Length: 595
Ligand code: PEP
Ligand code: MG
View 1 (cartoon, rainbow, N blue to C red):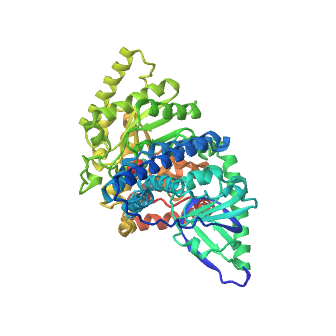
View 2: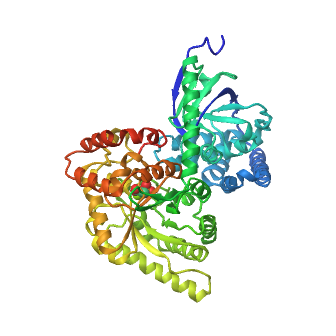
View 3: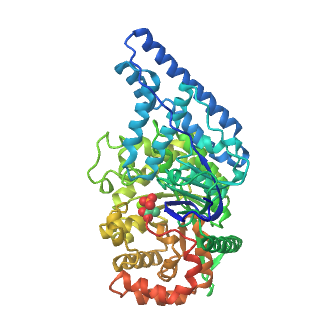
C-alpha cells in the first residue's frame, strides 16, 4: 500500500522544538539487546565478571572522550552532556549497584547491569519533575552504552544517513545525536523524552522541528512512511492525506514567514505606540541558551534558573564550575544584564537526598529555595562566591527565590556581605556592586512588598508560584490545571499592588513567570504597569512585536476596567474580544502559559 492509500494517523506528543516539516521516515531501530542470566558461584568467575564490567566502563569512558574531542563546532556548546555522562560512569546508582549485584547475586556483569538500568528506569518513570526524569535518562543512556560494550554490540550507525529524512526513534542519546549529520535531518520524532531532553535542546538549538514523548511512534511508523511533524503543536501525522499535506505546507510557509519577520523585528526596541519603553528579557536554564536569547532579541536575561547544574548528579558543582558557567553566560550577553537566581531546588525541582534523604509530605511548602540555602550555608556561599566572581566580567544581578519574610532577605544579604569580605581578604577578583532582588512568588511577599522594597533593588514576580500558592493549585497536577488562572481577580489585584508599591518606592519590577510569554496577557501586564518582561527566548519575538503596536495609556484603561471583574473568564473573554484579531498570528507562535 502506498502512503496515499494508507489511512492518515495522528499521534499527539510534546512539542520539543517548533517548526513544521514534511518528509520520509528513517526508523532508528536499535533492537533490544538480549541479555541472559548466568550464575557464577566460583570466586574466580566473580572476579572475572567484575573485571569485564570495569573494562567495559573504561571502554565507554574512552568512547565518550573521543566524542567530546570530535564534537563538531556547531554543537560544541553541548559537550557538557558528554562530560556529565563521563561523571555518571561511576554513579552510585549505576556503577556501585551493578558491582554490588554481581557480588551479591553471583551473576554475570551484563545481567547485573541490565537489572540496574531497568530499576533506574522504573524508579523515575512516575516522577513528574522533567529535569529529574531527563537526568535519569542520562544514567540509562550511559548504562546502555556500557552494556553495548560488555556485549561487544556494534553501535547504531547513524552516521550513514545520507538522505534528508525525519528521524524516528524510541529515544536518542546525546552521543547518538552527535553521530548524525544533522544537516541531513529534517525533523526528530521520539517515543520518549520531553521539553528538557537533550534531543529537544539540540533540536531547538539547530531549529529542527521535533515532537517527543509520543510513546508508540516507533510501532506505528515504518521506514519511508511519509510524515508531517508539527513541533509547535506536538503532532505527528503518518500517511497524511493530500488535503493535510496542502494544509501543512501552507502552515509551514506561514510559520517561516512569520518567524523571519518576527526575528528580524525582534532586534528593534520594544517601544509602545505611545513611546513607553519596555525591556524584554530571556529566561534561561543553561549557559548555551544565551545564544538563543540574543538571537531572539532579548535585552538581557531576566531569569537564569540555576538548578539545572545541581540535579541528578553525584556531587554538587564546585565554585569554579559555577563561576565558569556564569562568567561564560555574562560574557556571551555583554553588555546586556544577566539576572542570576540563586538555587531554587526542592518543591517541583526535587533533588534526591536533599532533605537528609527523607521525602517531604508537602515539598512545595517545605525546605525549598532560600529556606534550603539558608540551612545549607556552605552550598549557598559556594554559589554566592561564584556569582560575585562572575560579576567582575559583566552586568550581573542576584535574585533570591521564595522569600516570604524580611528575616530571610536580611539573612541572605548578610551572607552576601560575608562572602564579599572573604573574597576581598583572599584577593580574588569580584564585583560587589551587584543589584539585589527578590522573587515575589509567595503571597506573603506581596503583602510585605513595601518593607521588602527597602532591602532590595528590584522585584521579580514569579507568577508560576504566585498563582500556585495563591489559588492553592499544584502547578504540576493536571487534574487541577483548569483552575490555574493567571487572570483570576486575586492575581490581577496582587500584580497591581506590586507595581504600585514598586512605583512608589522606586523599585524596578520584572515579571518572569510563564504568563509573561503569553501574548494574550501582554496588554494586561503592560496596563498594570509592568515595564520588564522575562520569558522563554523563543517567545520574545511575538511579545515584542505586540508591545510595539500597543499603547501603554490604552492598556492602563484596560487594566483599570478588568480589575473589578469578578472572574478570570470575564477577563479572558474581554481580551479575546478586544485583542483577538491582533493575537491570532502571535498566539500560534507561543506555548501555553501553564508552567
Ligand atoms: C515562578 O515561580 O514564576 C518562576 C519564574 O520560577 P520557577 O518557575 O522556577 O519556580
Ligand atoms: Mg518560582
